[in-house]
Image (cartoon, rainbow, N blue to C red; front, side, top):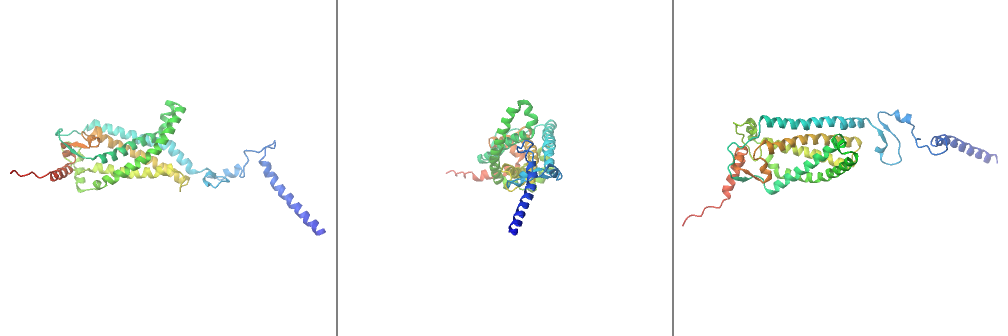
Amino acid sequence: MTRFVGIGLFIVSMALLIIAAVVPAQAQKLGPDGAPNPTASVTDQGALLKQAPRIEGRIDIPDRKASVLEQPAGRTWDYFHEVLLHWSATVVIVGTILLLGLAYLIIGRVRIAEGRSGHKILRFKAFERFSHWLTAVSFVVLGLTGLNITFGKIVLLPLVGPDTFSDVAQAAKYVHNFTSFSFVAGLVLIAVIFFKDNFPAKVDIDWLKQGGGFIRNKHAPAGRFNLGEKLVFWFSLAAGVAVSASGFLLLFPFYGTDIPEMQLAQVVHAVVAILFIALILAHIYIGTLGMEGAFEAMATGEVDLNWAKEHHDLWLARQLKEDHRDEPAATPAE
């Protein structure tokens, strides 16, 4: 009998100890009126703040990143996105436009020295032009909607107000996301079609020595693409791959990436995109205002014979030779 009493006293003692441990913790979760305290936590604020600069709590869901309240890289990323990106993008884009304007004032438009011959030669086939314009239009749409993400709050929001800006920003984000697929398709087509014509060649050195066709009294020899066009091709291809890869990581967040890697992807995407815009601005300038007859190559596919002779003489000679070879032989007179 004494043995059972001892066991009973032991059980009661353990129960009292458990209650003594649980009640204070439970009391912390209840307010003065006995209602649950919404500010109560398993980990108190003091313990969390001691973890600074990285503060991580405890959660019941398996998504570990949701438990991170603060991280040093987050402050760095925020400073980049809200300060450095705004200033650097402004300097790069506005600076590029000013330099191109200065080039136009100093050099002017490069005219066809001998004037138009009135004869045309095919430079780009229909599918080649389609691939170019698919990529070009997609790029312009991506550039404008992407710049809205960076500068929209600064430039557009004060002009249209928060409600309209919210609608515009949401639409721009959807357009940006879906246009990325057509851009990648165009980029792949351009890479496949023009890859073989953009390898470096000895004539590229001669083209560079002669000032690339921008010095009026010097002739710069070139094949189908000159050195400047080749550099635009390779830089565009590299930049296109970088913005596409980083963009798809942002489009499908946290599929194999964590918070720091997502922040890195956003930084790479933004920096490469800004430099890409500057490069394409120069490309557009040369193809329109900068050089007479250049835009026709991608507009109609044909260029003036004298233009081809002045800017792509080696390619022209090869084309004329092939065209002459393809002509049917003259039938001898009987």
